[in-house]
Length: 258
Length: 258
Image (cartoon, rainbow over all chains, first blue to last red; front, side, top):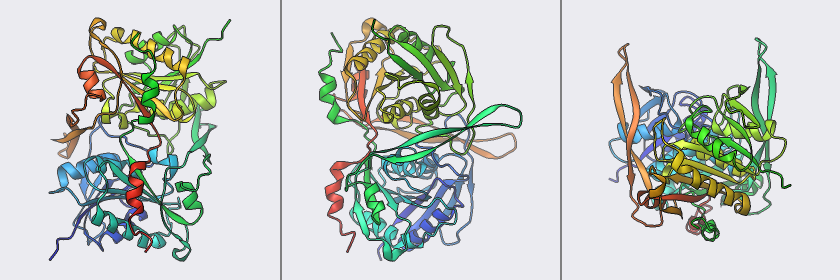
């Protein structure tokens, strides 16, 4: 009998978020599941790690059918590091992060704790995928996403991923019958046009809330934004070698050593 | 008379760190300087932003010769966003971040608040550079780095940078006369081999410190690690389009829609 794959599940919305529960329910159908996730919401913490503070880890039991479940007082990336070094007996066959409550398409990938957790797993040589649903609601409906999540996770388990590559999967907020399929995409050239909302606290001191509008500046039909706007699940392969190789020749033409 | 360039200075070690003071002293020689930096150390916060908490901004006056100086209760990326949207009257000609107390070479770029601040400025279309000295000491000697910082900053002001490209500059801990020059490099394939140091707090509860060893797995002579180990200043062009274009063909061969 073939051994079941070992799957590490994490997220950035916290271990009790409905999104991670949806992801666990799909992973239980295809493997043995270990969950290590932050004990509180950690959205937009990027690739942050906890080096100036202590970490507390708690064994928890939210879902009866998983092998082990732990909450971590740190960030999503801390959770992956702790899982790999302290909890898991062997390197997992797959790490999945999410399902995030809200989009991690285009430039959001860089702020995303969900994706940073997946990238950290990828850096450890574990095939890894981040999943995000385009619905920020805590009570979002994850059911339509499940068949797509299962299909992509199974493909990664079967085929593996190229070294240094992690998948960023975003799922449109649509009924299953209206989702047109899965598209391999590039990251759209988009950004946040920030605003700072200035207020005064009860003690008379000014403070700010960071807020803003998402602006897509990319009209390409090969982007994740295009795919999502047209009813597709977007899959962007991302990498942690950030070197802009195309810029090296130009920089080498500078006279930096004269 | 030619107008002096407007230079935004930030960091992740906090506004009172000696590293940012060294950077400010160099930038004052080439432009008008505005400083917006975190009010406390923010190392390893990556591209984290503050969306669930309030931000406090304080006008401070640490250095008499700069145009304006502000401390920010948030992260390095928050500081850049606030500077660009709320403080600066026009888009700066350059953003410099650092000088970081410690290396941001190879994979450290992904955890680095210093580099994330520079990347955020790059995303805003501002030519941007992160500077880091390979010395974690608070009282590190930044003097030998200054001529190299000045040379690189002036080149970027003169030549600009390709769209979407930010410079990650690391400086060896060497006397100026022993620094061999400046090398354009790629990010070395290296990683952290983490350990979790388990302790018990005074109340009997177990906690952990994240620690680890840096492991360079790359023997290429074109990497930042090689350059630094051989007495060069390393310059890696980095990008925020994380798409792994080379992996797209392979993923497209998967049967995801059948």
